[in-house]
Length: 263
View 1 (cartoon, one colour):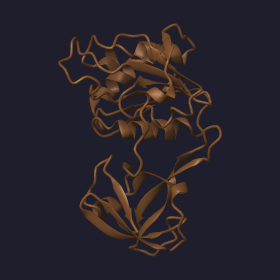
View 2 (view 1 turned 60 degrees about the vertical axis):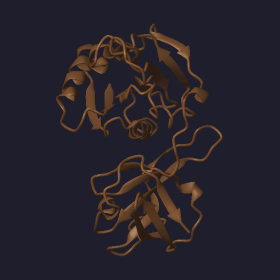
View 3 (view 1 turned 90 degrees about the vertical axis):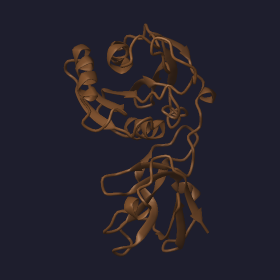
């Protein structure tokens, strides 16, 4: 089994190793890939759950995610209780197990063939993704659904916000939650983009490299996934500075900041 472990522990944080060990105890022949998202960023978590889960990959796949800001209840917590564990089954057979917090399930809620609460403790440890959840995740991965409980409805999951920074990749390209289908421009049209307090000219392109060196492109990017039933396939707009770094151009914005197209 190929396991994508998505969490906000931090790049290189030993927490990844601790959780991976627990998963490997129950799934010893698995391969685990680690993906670190910014602290408490349920938007980035949800984006990558959908990007990895809804696109082609190995036949036997589990996505195990943990980004739990414990913001569902602002009062003092008892026994380290936090948001509950959930299970989703995607149309391609990928199983997704992780905490239902913020936007973690927002990108896949209309794609899921099954979406359920998992009946495990919501407390018991500060480090629930290591101490409480792996046993349930491993059981589900192996086809044991005895802990799978009440179904969740898509209406119970918040919609993800449009026009936001979803991710900054290693080249400084800015992936957004602006659907490519929402942009109706001719190639080489000049646009103005604002992120935070920074405004920059850009050129709309239908292919990122179809701009000259030093030009900021506003173009359909590499991220997206097949359509949910009855809808178009999804592709997301990116900001790409050829020969440079769009993230630096915009003052190093954070995930979830608003992206505004002017004109």
